[in-house]
Structures are given as C-alpha cells and as structure tokens.
Image 1 (spheres, helix red, strand yellow):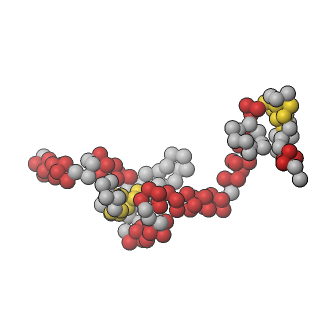
Image 2: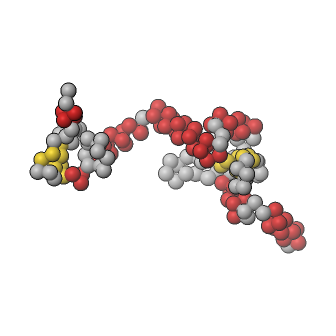
Image 3: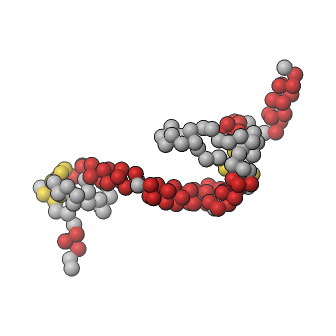
Length: 154
C-alpha cells in the first residue's frame, strides 16, 4: 500500500480537505503538525468532547500527576497520597485543610509539596498560604524569628 493514500490531498497548494467534516479549507485552518488531518475547529470540538468524559478526566489527571510529582519532586503519586494520609489531609504547618479554589475547575486545590530548594528533600504537604509564606521568606529562619519577635512585642 502506498503512503500517498493516507496523505490529504492538497488543492491549489493552498487548501486541504479535513477528514472529519470533509470540507476544503485553507492550510492556515490546520495545525502545524504534519499529522493533523482535521481542521482546527473539528479537532477542537473532538478534544472538548473527549476531555469532558469523566473516565478520561480521572485517567488524565492521574497520568499528569504521576509524571509531575516524579519530575518536580522525585516522589511517586503513591508517596504523595501516603503523606496526605499521614497528615490527615491537612497542612503540616497550620493543620487546616486547603481552602484555595482553582478558578478554572472551581475545585479546591490539592496541598502543595514543600521541599528544600537546596537539597531537593521533600518536607511535607502545605496549604497554599503556608507554602506562599515559606516561599516569600526563602526558608530563612531569621526572618521567621523576626516576625515572631515583632508579633510578641506589638
């Protein structure tokens, strides 16, 4: 079988036929990938429908988190979930559950993985507020002590 059968026909070198809607459209209506056989609007509609399926959402989220935790912190998703259980789903510092809501998904965000930026060692899971405070103070104990002294004196 010839590979030419699988290629989309070009008309006037400026148009291409979409395999989904079968209409001829300008090349600019297709993605930059040579494997893109659907026009952008058809691909967008398929992608939107595909990612609305509940089983795909869960599978994609788990797949994303597996790779993310491994790349970013050197831990597995199972290790993250084990830490979450040990902390009873609460922040390691303030002992509160995460309350920050993701504006896109409208769901409460998961606890952040706190780690030492110098050694890469994972220390625990924090809510977004505690994680932000640690980040702003660059893990500087002297700054934290200065804050404690300030609060005690005022």
